[in-house]
Image (cartoon, rainbow, N blue to C red; front, side, top):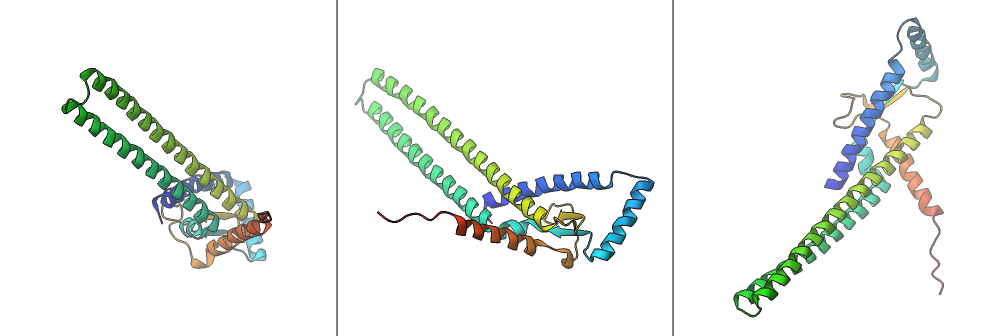
Length: 215
């Protein structure tokens, strides 16, 4: 998993941890007789439904196998590599022209006044390159955040659809750094959710308008 994928996976884990904590507080904050009665009712409901109350998803496995995430992260990585290539080209050109300017001055090819004027122009260009680099870095960060939110939103949508009949009371994250330290493999619904996610990706491809090759 490349650095971009790792960072996005970590961000997803952090967001999901926070979401699970909020769900936990909302679900179990109430105490007293009302909570005891609700617990009894839940127990009866679980026995009749045959579904476990709590299941889990391994977000690391889910994200690494999610086709949409892999496509978008590859596009982001290619965009980053394109920026790095442009930056290297700008810096190499700048360095070569700076060295030539210095060499011309030392060989008295140009006057001191002309050298000073060109040196100031080179300093301004250096600031422009630094500004361009910062702008592209911010653009990549924003793209990465949008990617993370898009993937998270699609996962939450599928999870909600999967659990629309409320067969499970809680679905938690069992990734490294998640809130669950252990989970029986029988409670792992990662493959089920991943299959639904990738199925939606395939459906989107089939429904996407095809390019008209007719001239």
